Length: 249
Ligand code: AMP
Image (cartoon, rainbow, N blue to C red):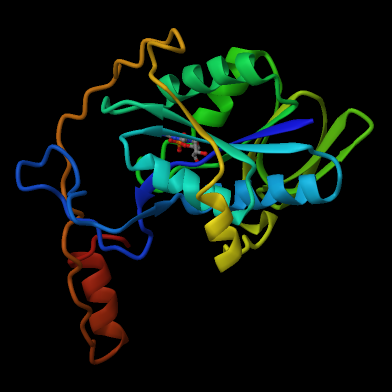
């Protein structure tokens, strides 16, 4: 059973993101980029499925500019078997990514596709759901536990007020939540081994997909600066401020 894993190259989560001067987007030049944290969890889960004997091959897929191949190498160094890079300089939006993933699914015939529940750059949280809809497959979103047995994927999801476990018919699209697992670090020997692993490259045209963006970003603004707190002398002053300054009572 093959498992496909989507790995997006995003601004590293430790970086303080800055808006470009012309407000068309955020600054990415000379900024540290890394694999989307939820996708590290997706790679880890796929590797665990292979180690448990459920999966036979783990294929890491990234889409976007040339440097996305570095993100694929990271997945290969963690232990993925091979990579696929959809190379394009077009800004890829969730629907385009889902269509490209569908085209790869049709080439590779996996039983499981694992994506992050959301990319920390656009925060769309749409791609996995769109992919499941386009394929007509079951979907287990925001997974905090995955058990595959007898042609069924049992996916536990964190919902308001507790946990929900759904039994899904395979093939299945799964999106990962933070508590699914703790991703491994790549060891030095595995980083060396990863250099020899194959990464196939396609363009959206090769896959027969029109990846043109459908949504236009009008402008991007920094959040307003936080106003510092203040001390009040007594309860009467607090009530007065809440009533007359904050207008909340
Ligand atoms: P989003 O719907 O944009 O929040 O992204 C959800 C998930 O879709 C991510 O965590 C990735 O697993 C996958 N994904 C989105 N964009 C890409 C991309 N350009 N390359 C690879 N995977 C992607």
